[in-house]
Image (tube, rainbow, N blue to C red; front, side, top):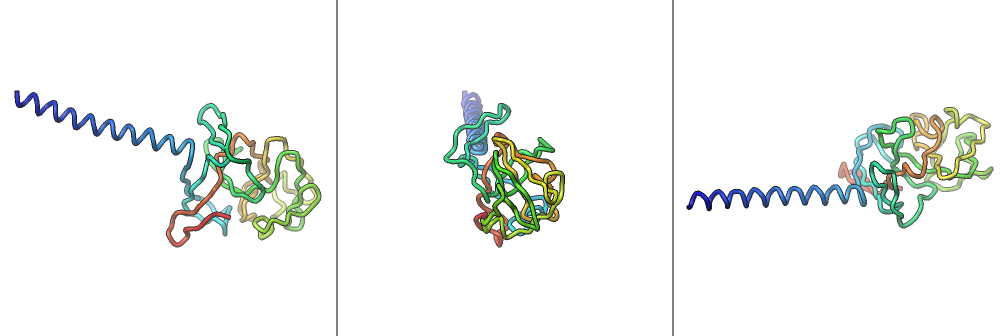
Length: 196
């Protein structure tokens, strides 16, 4: 009789552990899909804003979380704004996420001239964009070339223009492929700061 009770107690404790782990996993996945996700910066394309090894927190609920596998977006608080750093599904490599800065929106015409960005013929004055020198690289970034951005798409650039593969090379980021806004560097401790 005692052995049977001990076995029941062991099964009960094991079941509690399994239930707790399962609930924690489901909650973590829910938070990751709908609210926040963490990414590690692997390249120097966003130096000095982000450097290799930085770990960042990306907010998904701001623009609206994208439901995996179906690509449907739940409405967020607002749309992305010029100058913000975003994380998105890479157009050339659909299995990877990239991080870049938004400089242009669908329907606008973008041109890179003498290191500056011009939208619809006017130079961008946003200090987050203006602080960088942009090189005329790639099919969409040639000197004297004015590029029309397709509707529901973004033109994105890396802050470290000399070593960034971005919209100048592969084109535009569809709005549906934006994963979220880069909010915070949370690691390493000496680099903790909000992302501007």
